[in-house]
Length: 492
Image (tube, rainbow, N blue to C red; front, side, top):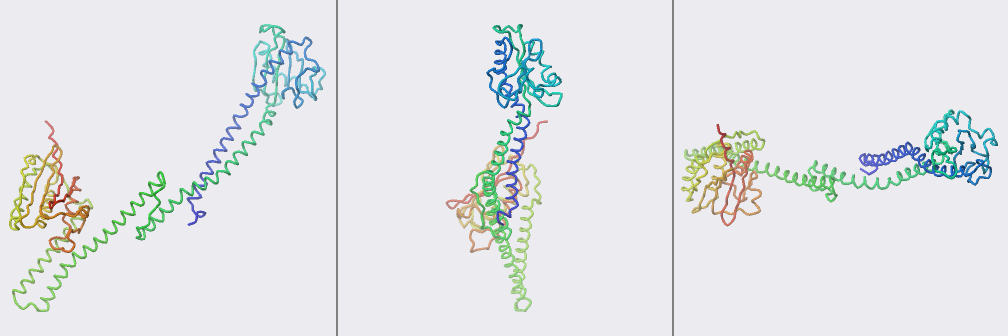
């Protein structure tokens, strides 16, 4: 699938670009909401010292403001705002805007440049008394016509004094918010263009970042499809950092484990087929011999009958072991735990296998286990089954003159039971697989067992929440498994 057709690729790119666009849009919207007030506050702080300067100059002019007063005019307004000067009685001495540079008394202004009484009363009237009382004001107010104005007003103190009780008038600057907005429009346009440019510039990193994220995911999808068809050789890219790399490692580990599992399944089928084929072929051959009347003597017939029964029992044991192993691995086998005396079980199996070992010329020893008489908490039948499997395995692999030792060492929490036999060393390469189904160290010889006993012992111990391991070196092989000690009785 090409990158252009990748749904995930398009979704991630769209998500990143949407996030950038949403972030820019929210920033612009929030800016529009607060920028007007911030701009008005900055403009008020700018006009306030100018208003104080105008107030000082007004106080130093005996006849009030006259034509040619040296204030700069900008856009027909001094300092970009309308100027209003009042005497101590609240009478207007000057109002601007004007048509050209300079200042004119109120009486000389054309009517269209004079604020109406309603506007003056609404915009300045409420603050005039406050300013004449000696306090400066900075407010945003609405005129009778519905226009919004920034109002900055300061008192005019009598010349040569700073006593706030000697106030000779008031100076106001007014500027419509529409004018402030128009001066801010350039900044708004700049911010809008910057947001659009940032959005366009994010296309490239969003494409590259999404591509870097999607490619390993697509590789994992390829690995998953390959595994579904039975190909476990394909691997995902696990060199990525973070969760993507961890996912790639997990996918590769899964592929390796699946390959191992598939090989185990094939080996299992092959081993089961082989183990079943041998007794079945033997029974069939002897049955056909009897059916064809080729066995003439009674002794020959009885031998064939005996071998048929023996192979049937072997086949039955194999089927029983397979069913037992399946139940253990499925967790459906009985594993109820009780407290019991381990020493009694050790003695019983020692008595049974002691005679069998002597018949084979093998010495059997049961080590003193003084603390093994402590009660343990497990399933006695299953523990005895494990001991039988391990001892049977030891008898088969111990040569004449060898020794088999059964021992137990107890601690406060558990008892470690060991089955030790001499004469055979398990190769280190075989140790990790010793508990697998049908695994045999000597692949050239299959007699003496079907390779399921140790697997059953391992599953039993695992089902009892215990541990089993094998050690082998210098002609000594040791199987060790744990049994939990019985919990202390609660005092009455």
